[in-house]
Length: 465
Image (cartoon, rainbow, N blue to C red):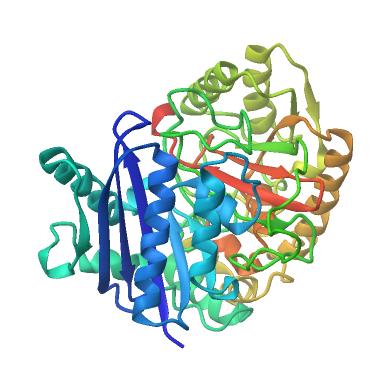
């Protein structure tokens, strides 16, 4: 069976205003452009143009191979969520367009993925060229060929986006750990927590906060021009739905209203003296305080969260660096800090205070075993990732029961944040080594009544310096 990636976009200069769309069909193995479509559609809204782009892209894929499996990538959260069946379609202009898109290929052949705008430049460029052509000549429309388009993707970038990491078959922890070891070995120094050196596959998105302060305000909103976010459905518990799996069938295909989710805003503590040195710093070490840089970061993130005004409670790990970060935020929000023992960092045993390189030199066999299996504990009675996952899962469930429908800030560490994100995504244990969390970085998980979770990552802390 043929496999294609369709990237589509649409835009309107005025919303509504002069509008156009662009769509491209890519070979997922090589990144080669197989077909392009673009059209000026007159006066329309952004959303109408985006749906028109989707329709054009799906039709182009069908012309190439009617039985193809198609992955649609768009930076329109609205279209992706509605076509995936997770959001209802309420606007009368959108319903016929969605129905038209759904009829082009059988539902089982098409999956949808949200991507940040910066990764949808090819389709965006096509849409803008269509709008420019419309401006010059009024009504314009037609079929584009790759040879005549100025919007061709950089071939190397296309391959990087389209080719999955060489991590072996799904569920092969040994192969995943091999990729982890390669990433860690190439890093300078070592890692704080379970590997600060990362590969990119599971880092969903990163970016600076939105100027309008919409981050975390409404997990179901789709703000235009907002922060770079990704929402991926996954079970909150152990029986996670595979990422990218098609939405469940039934009824009209549109999901029910799950009501207001409980949202955990996950804040990694600010820097300590050990952070820039990339040393293991868990719950069995020296319990360092925030450095001067860490205090600046805590103050900055406190100001950012205060400006958004959505956090209703502040809960912290018992370790000093988290309590200091949490207190800085709570003081700005006028809230009290509640300490939760279950949010503590993993105990790294005899590795506490060491860099990855030092651990590799002193405890090579133990380190190898730890990288190969989540059940393995660090040397000297540390805590395994399996044990930490049980602890953090129980903590999550307890906090969800106590804070249904609320937005709660959890100030914690690298490993608890990664575990909460991993569980929400339904990702394998080795994915812990493939995520990077900067000091004072924010992530969020919204937990819905049906057990699904929506993950949002914001991992650029340059604004906190």
